[in-house]
Image 1 (cartoon, helix red, strand yellow):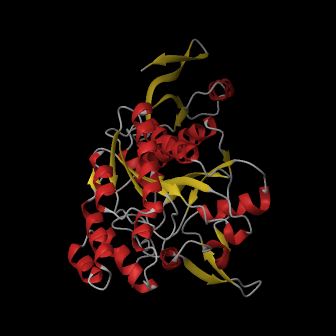
Image 2 (image 1 turned 180 degrees about the vertical axis):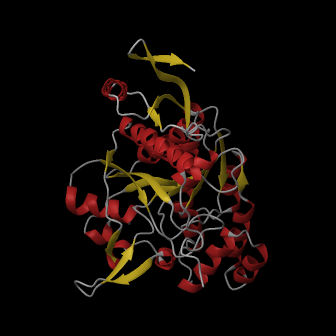
Amino acid sequence: MSSAWLLPEHIADVLPVQARRIEELRRKLLDRALGYGFELVTPPLLEHLDSLLTGTGHALDLKTFKLVDQLSGRTLGLRADTTPQAARIDAHLLNREGVTRLCYCGPVLHTRPSGWQSREPLQLGAEIFGHAGLEADLEVQELALDMLRAAGVAGLVIDLADARLVRGVLAGLPVDGAVLQAVVEALAAKDAAALDTLAAGLPDAAGSALRALLRLYGGDDTLDAAQRELPDRAPIRAALDDLRWLSGHLRRGHPQVRIGFDLCDMSGYAYYSGTRFAIYGAGSSDALARGGRYDEVGAVFGRRRPAAGFSLDLKTLAEHAAAPAPLRAVRAPWGEDAPLRAEVRRLRDAGEIVVCMPHGHGPQADAFACDRELVAVDGRWQLQAI
């Protein structure tokens, strides 16, 4: 018989110290987004399934919990990603002309974990709708870097890529969906043997270009190598030019951030339409933030608006962020004395944390550092250092 207190696999409670760290990060990062002009939205956790999965590809479908609505009989989904919801809000509820900047923070649910991560990430993200130029790509990259720096993450590295490279390599070839998916998975896993097998069924030029993608990661010389080894086609030229432009601006604006390229990064391939990025910190083997351009995300809602954005998991980020110091607090007795209770209220109204301790109990655990206490002196309650 299972214990009533056991949670499902890869689902966990967030305990006080970590919950405080996550909440402080949430406030700090949303304030940083506000500083860029992003407006906060809060979409529902539950939506009609066809709306949640619009334009997102097969991978998100597999991640999404599904259930039947007892009111309508329609299939509902528990969101696994908030970006389609932001696109729906932009297209149908706001319906603005020009640029719209939206940010959000809330839980998402995944049917399966990614590695050892939780199945209930706390997703924070930002999206720019309505501008096709690289200025939008650069802005979301800079906001993501600023957020991670504000969280105290050291040793930031941003890897740049572009979804148009693989599409440019395979352009015009009769490649069915299953083969394309297998190619994407082999590139994402950097599985040279699997890619060789798949390339054997393609023209020599395409096979050579796909094999070259596996080697195209590293510093600035990666783009020069890509120009030599990939087909000279318009989408590939445009992608490489855009990556040069972005990396140049990032290097000038963020000289402390290491910039690299991983041209076979295929995470979320079906989702992206152009430039994309992943940001790592010192000691993080998985990306702390991912994003890029996904111009098709709003098409099904009737507005094919350019879009660029990123998201991160606050729970994961909290594990890499600088640990918060204990909160300074005032210790007070827990009593019925009216002047005592009035002084406790006054201190709390002034922004102090006042922890009232019942008689016979020791100090409250590690979240608070009580460095002062309320003591009665000549019939009056006064603060004294501990």
